[in-house]
Length: 169
Image (tube, rainbow, N blue to C red; front, side):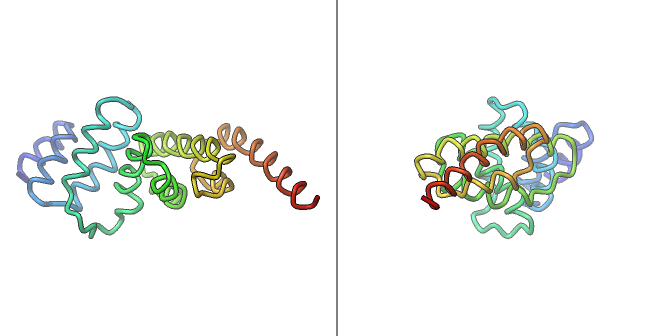
């Protein structure tokens, strides 16, 4: 399994590399490959690869003993849950942990911004109903691009002013 994983690493097929690393029970190495190559590509492509990513993540043992799991694959796992409608728990996790995600490459940065935008949109959608359980100001800590940060800052400022006016009245 390890030899096959190495072969696929050098041929550039990171999906197969990750699968063979999981077969070999090399979870730390599989985790590194998935968060560095596989998961960002799946998020960026936003298609059938997301289902394939979900299947890879489910192959990890239930006890998450991988050192950077919460800033790695658990972020992608919660993103998949968020886009599949499991919002409250996954939204809170992403709002708390996404700012700590290691953005080691351009693809990872792009994936983090895509996830952050989805989180910010969902927080704002649920802000009026209070159903997200996440404070709206957490949006400002998300790894959004400069344009997106300004886009989300305006509604947050408006909401803050409304809160201050209503509390002061």
